[in-house]
Each structure stands twice: as structure tokens, then as C-alpha cells.
Image 1 (cartoon, one colour):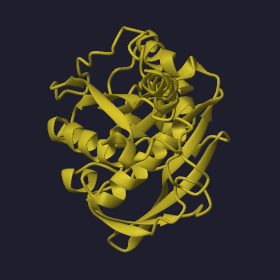
Image 2 (cartoon, rainbow, N blue to C red):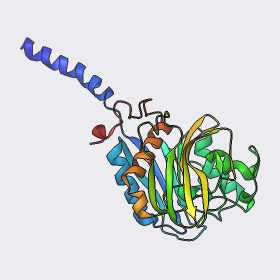
Image 3 (spheres, rainbow, N blue to C red):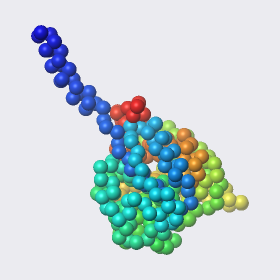
Image 4 (spheres, rainbow, N blue to C red):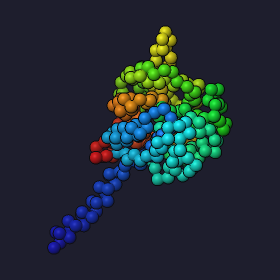
Length: 273
């Protein structure tokens, strides 16, 4: 009986060690809904694409409301991100301008929960002040300060040439420049000093060429934030190149992306299966 007892003892000792080497998936809250986009489809495209690329589980805070003041489930609840490792803002809530509401949306990020922001999130939570540069530390700048970049509008839907201007950053390392389908190029009113540009976009509009930062990181009071203004149309959101960029940005924001641009042990796609 002693050999059996010994084997059982070894098995018990080995169990916790195996568990410790298999991290739990990152819990991701995806906020989606509002004007002008097919969020009903895009939330599912993002969930599938991210869960294929990383050890994450994506939950939704979704509203089918297609107005510029969508009834998002997070509104008015400063604790909406409790239990989550990161929040993806993919809402289009341009006319939610109440400062108390915006403060509550930012509360988890002020408390240290990383953020990822996609496309129209850059044009959300504003009151008309977005057309003029807003100084960091002021009430009207609080959403822009979190993003690290202030944008007020976009051009027509035309292809955008995307060039990675920092090829050494873990998010962009090894990624190739590419050209989107018909997409919207968001302008840059200002880029805050806490932000670091990763990709530049160029769009031909008639005889004119417009340029703007289209992907960047931000240090928001010590919290990591990744953003990209790309992602208007479904064909872009399901593009492998787009999903690779967003997945890397998410992992970086959570501190789970190595310097080589690959997920750290336990957070890659193999661990998610």
C-alpha cells in the first residue's frame, strides 16, 4: 500500500503547481451601442476575434439603442467594471455630455482598470468643447485626457493607408503596414503628452491628403490605455490585421504582452482553448 500512498501524495503536491501555471482568462467587459454603427454584429466579431487570439473571456454591456445618447448599461454606475481586468469602450455616445455621468464612466480607469478604446469611443462623452483644444486637468478635458488624444470629427469613407510609426513597441512589433477598406479618418485636435503614437493614417480626399494618428497608447494617471480610431465598418472589424492590433493592445494594457509582441506565458491563444 505504500507505493499507492506515495503516488497519491505526489499527485496532490503536483495539482496546485499545475493550476498555478495555468492562468485564468482575463475578464473583458465590452461596452457597445449607440449611433451610426452595426454594434449588434461588431460586438460578436470582436468577442470571437479576441477570444481566438488570447486567453480572454469577453462579456457585453450592450445597448441596441441607436441614438447619440444610448441607454448603455454602465451609465450612472461607477462600479460597472467590478470584477473585470479591462474595459473595451466601443460605444458611440456623442451627446452624453453630463459631467457627473462622464466621471462615473471614468471611475474604474481612475481606480487602475486598463482601457481599450475603439473608433467612435473617441467621439463620445462630449459637450461641443471638442472643437477647441482642452487643457489637461479641466472638467471638459477629462474624457480626452483619459484617451490621450482629442478628436472632433472625421472625413469621408475612403481607404486609409496605415503606417506603424513605432515598429519597436510590443503592440506593433512585426506588424506590417496595410490599407483599409473604406473607413473614416478621425482628425487630431491635439495629442496629449502622456500619449505615444503607434500608427499614422493617410487618406486621399480629392486632391488633398489628410493625415492623423490612428493608434496610440496613453498613460492615464498610471493606468495603461490603448486606442485606435479605426473600426467603422464590419469588414474592418473582422479583418485579421485589425483584430491582431486590438488583441495586442488589450494584452499590453493588461501587462500581458511581452517585449517581443507575443502574449506572455498562459495568455496566448493556445491557453484559451
